[in-house]
Length: 534
Image (cartoon, rainbow, N blue to C red; front, side):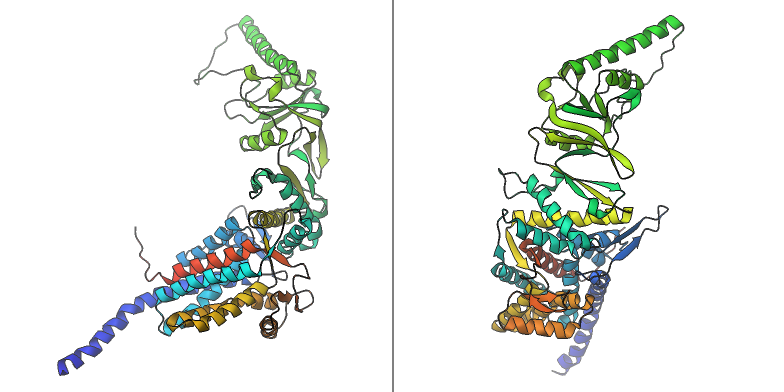
């Protein structure tokens, strides 16, 4: 009996030593992840701050943004757990396109609650399992709050796009960009697949000059380059017959690298004459098919066109746009409803696209080629984004992409939900009530994690310069009375019915944020050691 009593303290000491390293590793991971969450927390919401990101390399690139995914993707993070939060933001960007800051702030808040649970005796696995159940229940609560919509309800789509844009640097232009994003997205939706929206069908072209107000949606095609002016070729063509070619209108080269030595003028004249005849033969075949606009893919083997071929094309009154990028060919052929031509022998009328007008116009500092009135136009759209400087244009493009992603969410899952912190408070209260019905450590964990969801309304109020404690207390009070859609109106600085204020967001953004945040936190909690290998 005495021997057993003597060995008991030593076993206890061994256990303590054993868990010390695990606790330290887990604590370091939680601290690193929380630091990342705190870094982007101030940029949440319509009154959130912007970040200036400056790259330390020779280029000295500067970006001004408050988009969570952009900020975190540019951070040079060394700690593995911190990098997990950056990847979490990227996952949310891929899944929903919006809510990239929200998901990181949520994960940071859940991690903030974890140490108190672990020190109270909760096992990390028990806490992780409780989080899994909490995420499943939270999604059910969000579905119960959601409002179904139809894609024909353009007003609701514009409202949700406006909410996404209100927190951006270009928020003052949301009245212009929101309808533009909705029109662009709906023009791409294929009736055969009404639940799919492929954003690759929307092309955004950035042109310096003017203001964001000059941004426009073009029903047609824009090339961010000039038409060829060599030898006085045309710059405007009506009733255009357009060909997209992937071969070169230039003299052929040998397959292997070699040099040909010409010894007299007669041979030289013959080579030049053969070149002229070769190119002229190609131009005649192009003209015979009725083509009067030629889009030439950039070539890596040899020059796609030469001065001589441009001269003959100009004589034939054919408008030429050269150096079209290889990755643009699919978009162009889809828009023009034509086929790319890989060989001059396959140049036929049935492979051409048709449009009313192809013209070169001035936009800002440069010129672009604009194709309008396309016959049987494919389901694509082109947006020209304008701005006074490159920083504004880049941020306008990112904001427009977020607005398009919001419309994509609504096409995939046609439900809207209130914004302004309303769903988070509702989830927090219902989960806290549900925790009382459970037993044991799981009940304690879910209650603690449910309170962590209040970080979103708290941060919204804090960033808007309001008193966060009184605002969140009042919000909780209104939800306890059954006002599910009561949220923080940052413009008026009070609690209002947020649906009446047109602050709405897609259900997919909220469900994705809570699911991904819980998944990431579960993973971090389950790590008890870091093993470095060479």
